[in-house]
Length: 276
Ligand code: ATR
Image (cartoon, rainbow, N blue to C red; front, side, top):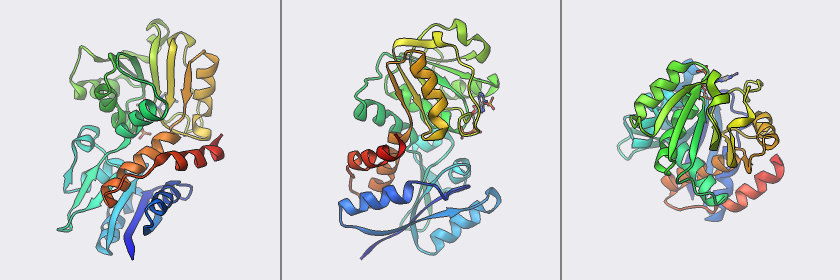
């Protein structure tokens, strides 16, 4: 019997790995499910979501550029979604209403701490960017026990707004992008800008990379190449892309929908072969 209909919404979405990941998880439990991609332009997103759930959809993943809209249209939301102001998971409740959740932050932290075995407690962290992706991971970094979180964004207002929303000024604060060369070295540098996706390189000084530094790009594939090459040249101890995060965030959605926790390692290993 089919475990139901699922989908990932995005624009563009045709290259999404989510259908493959969810089907691989489903095979671990002998589940059959339908999981498709739905390309919806922003103006058509809400209607497409409502149609999908009206037609019996049980759950949806949501990616760029719809995460904010997904959060806004849901009837209830988890704390992670409320803090981020965005959702990457929508789930149909028994009464037909929709619940929003955001698994990005937990997925990233689990990838770093469990897959790569790096304990973030006591790390000085630098978060580059203050858009949707940065909002998705900032609180999880705080919860993972970083000592400080310095948020740097090209437009300082967005960084200030994120730091204000976190509301722990002794630990989370902002600095100007131009001041990066004088900020000293960090233990963790997270690239949450969309520069790589847009085909642009970031101007970053080597001096921000500490001797035990872990540099992490939330994207993967070509979009992460420049930042990771910069990190290795700067002498970072670790340079990771967001492929593991993608698999972990999918696992959280899968568990929410099917009540079973998939083994992410074989799925990650298979995708890693593809993405080098
Ligand atoms: P996403 O959902 O991917 O985070 P977003 O909400 O549009 O997308 O945010 C994009 C982030 O990348 C922003 O922090 C943006 O900085 P600004 O707020 O100054 O626009 C950042 N960004 C995009 N291109 C960049 C570049 N070339 N250099 C530095 N930061 C860049």
